[in-house]
Length: 188
Image (cartoon, rainbow, N blue to C red):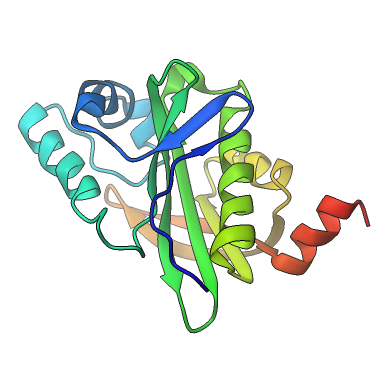
């Protein structure tokens, strides 16, 4: 594996770049202050902008570390619409766990699938991981459909694995191996 950090990337409709302080207002409005988004992305709901700024600054504080992978998902006009990040990296086993979220107004447009596909490509082709995983809470099957569309394969359900907002949730796990990614690329 070669850790490269949060590199600037592009896909057909989207740009992936480091979070910038100018993204904060949209980050707050779209992600931290919208209960529809927070319900599925394990992040604290904030109606306090100062606390939200603390969370935002924490997300951006480790960009010097080449093991930090946190992208702002932006439209082609460089407007912030969501996040995609590596929430777990294991150098010994050459694996990465990915997570993503979009502002509610961007749901249903294929942006999450496009973002996940691009970041999967980056991790396999540039970082050199062998296994990528992602998970969603059982109450969010739309996220599982995103993972499937991005080529990921259902693995298992871990019963009551996630404790969030005073409730236990089942966690639905997906994976894609480098060999599966290569087979998908070549149509095998």
